[in-house]
Each structure stands twice: as C-alpha cells, then as structure tokens.
Amino acid sequence: MRVLVTGGAGFIGSHVVYALLNRGDGVAVLDDLSSGRAENVPSHVPLYREDVRSRGGLREAFARFRPTHVCHLAAQASVKRSVEAPLDDAAVNVLGGINVLEAARDARVRRVVLASTGGAIYGEVPAARRAEESWPLQPKSPYAAAKAALEHYASVYSQSFGLETSVLRFANVFGPRQDPSGEAGVVAIFMAKLLQGERLGLFARRVAGDAGCVRDYVFVSDVVRANLMALDGRIAGTFNVASGQGLTTRAVAAALGQALGIDPVIDALPPRPGDLERSVLDPTALEQTGWRAEVSFERGVELTARWFACMQNAA
Image 1: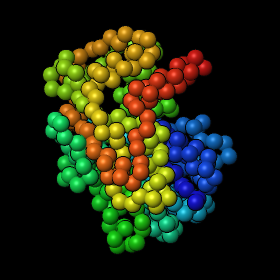
Image 2: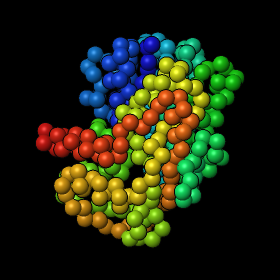
Image 3: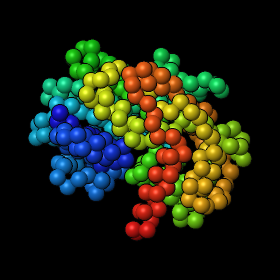
Image 4: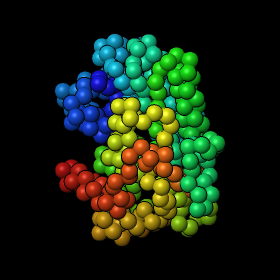
C-alpha cells in the first residue's frame, strides 16, 4: 500500500506512520503542523505541509505521492475549542474532511479510513450502559456535530461515488507523544502539570468537587491496530475503538500521580460547557473481528509516564 496519513505529524497519526513503515508500506504525511510536530515524522517520509482546508494543496499532495489508501486523522480535536469557535471547527472537521474525500475520489484511492469520535458523538450514555454503533447520534458539542456530519458525507461518497470508506469512532485515546498543549487529552494535560509541579483543574460532572466526568480510555497502540485493520480491508463499516471501561477524572488523576510518585493537588472546577457527564463505548463489534484492547489503562499510564519523564529529562 501507499498510504497518505493526514495529521501524520500528530499524536495518533505519527504512531500510525511508524506502524505502516515497520511492516513495509509506503507512507507520506500531510499536516499543517498547527498541532503536529515535524520531528514526529521520520526524515525519509515525505511531509506535505498543507491544510486540509486547502483544496489545491490536497490535490497537489495526492498527485505527487499517488496514494492507494488514505488514513484521515487531521482534525481540530478539542471540544472546548469547538464550543468557543464553531465555525473554525466546522471548517476543519467538515469542509476539510470533504476536501480529503473529494481528493481521494479524484485520485481513485482504493480506501479511506476516517477518524471519528465515540467519546462525543452519542451524547450522554446512561449509567451501567455502553454506547453501541447502532445508537442514535446525539452530538452535544460543535466538535461532535462536525464529526457526525463527516460520517454522513463518507457514507454518501461510498454509496454515490464508490469510494470505499470505514469510520473508526475513538474513545479517549492516550499514550506517548500526545501533546498536552496542542491536542486534547486529559491524561497528557495532567501528566505535564504533575511533572511541572502544578495543580490539576478537575472539571465537575455536575457539582464542583465531585469525581468529574466518566470517560472510556484506550491506549494509542490499540487504536493504531484498528486503523491498520481498516486500511487493509479486514474490517469495513463503522466501529467503536474503546476499552469499554469507564473512569472518572479523579480516578485518572490518582492513577497518574501513583505512576509518577506525585500526590496530585486538585482544584475543583464547575462543569465545562460541551462536556458530557458520561461516555463509555461498547467495543463488541470490533472485538468480534479479532481486535482487542490489549493495553490496560494501568499499563498504558506506566508507558505514558515513562515517556513524559524522559522528555522532561531531555529538556
């Protein structure tokens, strides 16, 4: 395969790039470096510094690299930012996504794998329940609405234009190389603050001082395997990529503190606009294809803490 990875200089994208290289695929990266970093891309991998909102830039990159497959991970990834600037969010996550689909159609790409959000797209998930792919989409933030819209566009491109697409709905992905300042992710944000001796701001689930929102956390290597399966055509359709387990923000903070040997100091904050109280996904459909979330939250935290500590020492 020749795979163009949009957002390939970012957290998840760079891990996908290395996994593809390790098995011998041809790879190129398209990234505007607004949140990704050039140093995340191996020097021998073509890096097209383009914005997915630029139709001309996309077409040039597709013409030069001639991909057979596309892994579309470029996104505005923050719920908070989407609430603050819905138009900017839609420009990247809807119009930018359509630009990628259109460029792939024109270039006769075999398959496009799209990253969506399981953590936001279903709306509130009741206690003791896990959201399945068949659940109605009930976005509560501009970010989730944009991702839902792009999923519908992918379906249209598949049905009307014959472009094979698969959609992966990620839970809260965490792991090494996640940027606490450039990409969403409470694990990375808390990890960096703890290492810098800073207090942690814990946004409430309902009332300031509670344990915080409940989320489903999945380690980045497990997400990478799902992307490779979709690129290979071993899975097709729409799948949750998740652990299926829910953790409160306070439990996450405690686990990170234990891994680093630091006692977190927490500031109790009110609920944040756009945040869901509870989001836990059901990964059964993907598990039935042979995929499993192989890295436990505890092990993932250990690996992430080790990476963050190494980065701090290197600095």
